[in-house]
Every structure is written in C-alpha cells, then in structure tokens.
Length: 258
Image (cartoon, rainbow, N blue to C red; front, side, top):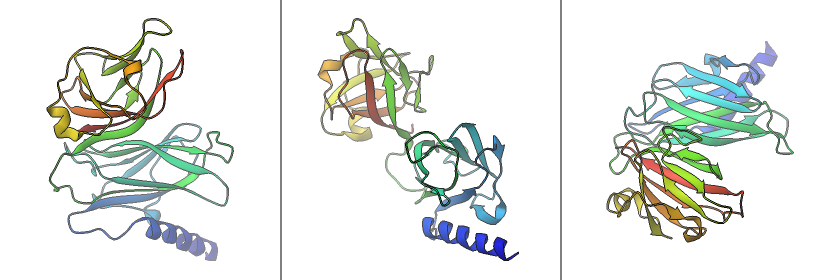
C-alpha cells in the first residue's frame, strides 16, 4: 500500500509540473502511459484526466511508436493547441512529438521514444495536451510538423503523412539524378515566396500555380505556399540542404484550417 501511495505521489508530481491550471475557456488533458508494450489501452483514471470527460487511449504500432488519442478534445474544424511529452522512469529513454492532429473531434498525438543511443525503445511516458482558448481569433492551425520526404516520394500536407497517394499534395520528383523538383499533386498548387514566412494570409494572396519548382531554386530557409488538394492553405520551409541523388527533402510545414 505504501508503495502505491509513493507511486501516486511521484506521478502526480510529474503531471502537476507538466500541466498548469486551465485558464478560462481552456480545454486540456493529460495521462501517464504506463504500459509501454501494450497494443491498445486506456490509462488508469488515477493518473489521467480530460476536461471533455471522455476516454484517453494509448496505442502502440511498433517499438517506441505510440499514438495518444484524447477523445472529444479536438477543435471540430479548429486546430492548434499545445502538446508536451516526457519519458517516465529511471532510465535514459527520451520521447519526442512527431506531430498532432486536433482539427477533428479528437486530439491525436503521434509520439516516438528512443533509448540513450537513439534507437527506438519502449518506455512509459507522460503526455499533456491543452488549448489556450478555442474561441481565439486569427488563423487556425489544422496540422503542423516536420517531414522527411525521400527522393521520389510524396507527402500529404493536410495530415502530415509521407507517401500518401492519392491524398498527396507535393512530390519530390526526380527526372534524373540532377534534375529534381517539388511538384504539386492531385490538384494542389504551389508558389515559392522567398525566405520570409508570409503566413496564411500571405499564402492566400500568393500566385499559386501547378508549375513544379526546381530543387535548386529552394535553398535552406526557402518558403513555399501551397493550396492543398483539400482546399487548405499551407506553407512549408526547407530546413536542410537537399543532398545529391538520392536525397531527402526535409521541411517544416503548417497547414491552416479552412
């Protein structure tokens, strides 16, 4: 019994440190994911909470690969929010947020965890999500993440998925080893906009076309506006130089809600 009380105190301290008190209008949730090898489970209600009063589900699709679903905490057309994740336990494991999708009914967070040497590893972790205020004005984020797109692969900028035909919006096309492009797919349109972020409104006013963009015209720091095949405005930034063939296109993107 004493051991259980001590554990409760430790977990409570971690979660209290992670999650600040909600402000007026804020929705939030947190959980201690304590079953690192289970394929699908609901964390103990003693160490989990959702202001929506709905279940929180943790799923595992591979070693160190997890998804946390906070049912009912999504924006139902308004996306954004804030996420924190921390590995839990005495070891040297660490966890990172891959991306999240909060534009639907649920708030869904994709997580990767690693051992000290950087290899995927199963571990317990704490995860927290929060909205500062879903009624806030201004452009609303549908999804945002960093993506690594291998040469000849495509990517969907609505949901942040690599290799997502027929939903893909951009293609890292290679005609030859030296002739390579970012090419719009499935009705998406693009426009390079320089080395300064122009935001959602700037992308809405950009001269978007179906023309492909040579990789050589996109040095590190370049921004490209996109209207996705689902009609959302998106902007991505080239985060690293594209290596000689076969290379990878490494970008950070934000797609705004309609």
